[in-house]
Image (cartoon, rainbow, N blue to C red; front, top):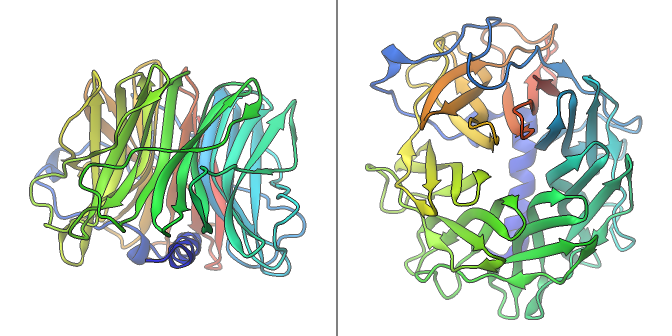
Length: 441
């Protein structure tokens, strides 16, 4: 797929998620032998005993120039109780997608604000925040993509002292070609100290992984990272997420095309400030020979100790979710993910979209599943003691669509080091419009 084709695909995927078309977006899970022992809550009941205690979700207020087009939350980051930031896109009155940020302060979600793109941004084409990372109240970094000067470009927007500044363009590796790039993940360890990852086209027009580092508030030029040994000569190598528990120690993950053209999941580690060669992640038993595998999100509680979630195929037309753990610097085999709330159907059609780990020891993933009543419901699921121990449905705002008509998705989750978390996503109202929401706790 060409870079332009890939970017168009990413835009379509985002808009599909915003519209709530979960049948096209979400991986489909097969029936689980654990169905009778799943832990969770029924709609409106308490959330898990371990992990975040989310309150009822609220509808988010879009910028005043918002039109009737799609909006979606793509990323979440929290720094302390009642203080979180979401990133995403909305459609303005001209139906152009605009990057936005939404801030929670003191437990109250403010109206979203549009982020200012670099001067060369084309006003008639959209842009999106792919990832956001915050280290203090009012101190965040957002990265994403936009179209400028006929190319797909990557941007960095910085918030300091509560003010978002005009975005700057990512400086690409010296071997970059003239097709474009995408910044898809960012992780900060302190104000002015961040790492972003993504992909760019080299001089031969091939996707290659990249990372850029910010030190003392200054962003260095991005560098190409080493692809897996079995990557195809013209295959894509795409990073989708990054997590840095401390400076010089990060884990990034995504997907690549091997020498036979099959799509594989991958991870790459930075230790002591050096990025190592990417490795292929091993999918669960039963994965197809061409699993179309991809990591959606990775999060680390400490260097070498991370959890990632994603999807793969176990039947030609059936995508399912997986989770995979890095312990002591070594990645285990991925596990087919089956845990869902007690009101899940069979199969439960689980889709894991995001994961966040905390220093206090637990990790929480967010996504969606299919209920016994025919709804696609938003959910969170918590991992503690080496196991996924509980799952619960996200309680939607008042005025949401009724049984059989609801399509909800918890697209992003972020947690503070101490365990306060916030999800962002979409749901259907009673009038069957799709709007963005957030829940925290």
